[in-house]
Image 1 (tube, helix red, strand yellow):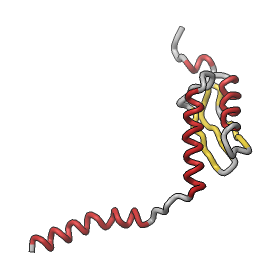
Image 2 (cartoon, helix red, strand yellow; image 1 turned 90 degrees about the horizontal axis):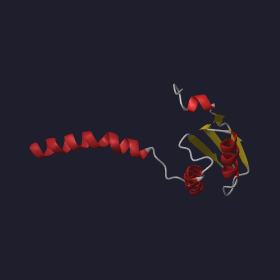
Image 3 (cartoon, helix red, strand yellow; image 1 turned 30 degrees about the vertical axis):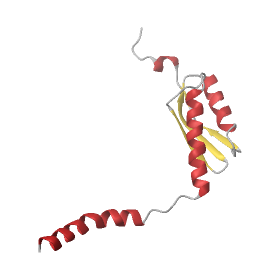
Image 4 (cartoon, helix red, strand yellow; image 1 turned 60 degrees about the vertical axis):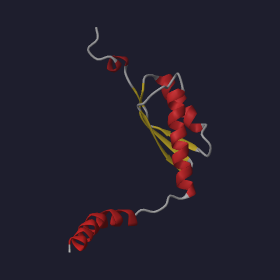
Length: 110
């Protein structure tokens, strides 16, 4: 009796997990390639001495990269767009980056 009760309890715990997994699909090669390109773009943006930012959040779609977030100055804005445009398969870059004012970088510093 305890064995069957344990099996029911185990089934009750596992069914929601199985149901959640059933709705997932395997990513297509195109989706995987976009994710990989977006990850590489993030690394390149961080490595670049002009940009070097954790505050840029790229969104990658087929042929288009959208840059959101902020950079310190116009040079960073321009360089981030150039790096994104140089990624394989990118045909257009939507640069929505905000340029932070010097005062907002160091608040309350006199």
